[in-house]
Structures are given as C-alpha cells and as structure tokens.
Length: 239
Image (cartoon, rainbow, N blue to C red; front, top):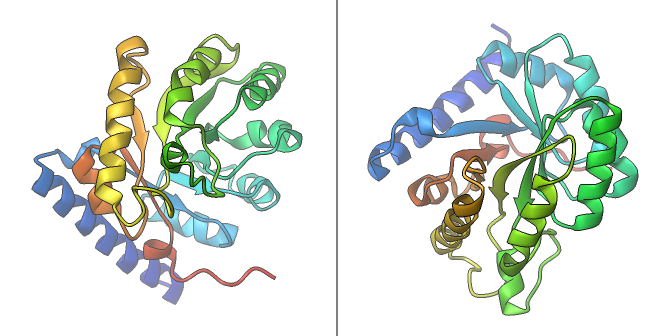
C-alpha cells in the first residue's frame, strides 16, 4: 500500500467512525447517511485511490478542475456532485459529467441546466441550495436562495425537462442568527425539507455538514454529508 493510500484509508476510517457514532447517538441506521468526499484541489490520482477504498460519491466546486478530473476517472463508477456556485456559462460542461448539482439557487440556472441536460440526453439531479443567513439580512457570499423562495424554485425544477428535484443543500452560515450554531441551522434546514416533501415526496435528500460539523448534521437528520479536509488533509493553497 502506498503512503498516500494508507493515509487516505486511515482518514476514511476515522470519518467513518465519526459518522457511525453520530448515527448511533441519533438513533439512526448508518446506511441512512451517505458520505460525499469533496475532492476539490486534489488530483485525479486521489479520486482513483478513494474509489479503491470504497468511496462512490465525490464532489467538486470548480468546473475547470472537475471536468478534466471526471474525464480522467471515467472508467470508475462514481457519482459526481457539483457543489460550487455555478455560472450559466459553465452549465454545459458541468452537465456533461455531474450527476447531481447541489447548488441550484435561481430560476435562470434552472433554465440553463434543463436545456443542457436535454441536449446531452441526461437526467440531472438538483438540490436547492438554501441560504439560511438570508432571513437575517446578513447574506453571506456562498450563494443560495432564501427559505421563502424554496417552493417557487422547486416548482421550476420539477417542471423542467431533464431535471430531477432531489432535495436541499446548505452550508452552515457564517453570519446571521445561525452563525456558530450549526445544529440550529441544520434543524432549520430539516424544517424546510419537511415542508418541501409535503408537495414533492421524492425530494428527500438533505445535504448538510462538512468536516467540522458533520455530527450536528447527522443529528439533525441529514442524508448526505460533504467531507473534504478530514479525508484528504489540509488543502494546498491555490495559486
């Protein structure tokens, strides 16, 4: 086993233990939570090692990094999640490899994703990114739609050819009433999810929690956690 593979295996084992313990504490089954490894800034060689170690869901936030990486790993069975803010001029590229876009936050993006998915003869899963800091008026820079805009956007996705409404995503806010209160933020997301599922029962995916707060997300009921640093290590600085 190479040094890098051994390192990733050890890190994955620690993350797995954290998720399993969080599930046990919350009275949930381990299989209720899917680990998505965020591989941004790391090479395709790491993605290939992760696949060897059993990882099946990976995430990227920049198309210019993700597209060549997805191509390099096309021989592996992986589910690719796009989690970054997405500009419409990148949509055609992203829809060529992503299985799920977790950062849908405006109607214009829905229109662009639908057109690209139809053109590529693909069905693309969509998560609505919810900006929990929008309610306080202290909107951060991470994107997302305010909670009161979720239903309208959900209806747009639901009626768009080539798109599938899968659920919701959030990042714990750095501003507003939920800053530093990750569990409260994720509980709020679950409330919004419950309302969404009343009209869209299949939209039951809830993506929340990262390396530092995955336990809070699992406790609140998240179905997917996005973990990067805890698996891959401290990210190298981008040039």
